[in-house]
Image (tube, rainbow, N blue to C red):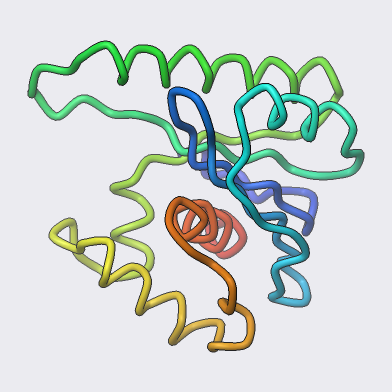
Length: 150
């Protein structure tokens, strides 16, 4: 993960997938979710392309020595497309690794999704996290991690 502080408090965080991706549009200054969803990847490209003044943050895949399959490589292609769309739009972007999210929110690499979810609820409150489900949790986790990492 880049260690530079982001210049924008409006973060479009993406948990990428092979066909669809979870996202949140997070206002870091006000600690609130402005928009959220799980959309087809082509729709995510359009969302990045039409949104001005944001920082695009995408969860990056890391290798831990295990064999990976077709889905992992297809997700990597989408990560690249999301980043390129941000670059083409003159948007700030960052890639964030899951290990950085686990360490920031939970203080351990052994953290599971349920631990991350509870850490987000504890940090932001139930009102802010209401309506967050599935891949949106991972997107919110990377948004919060980036917004608080300097």
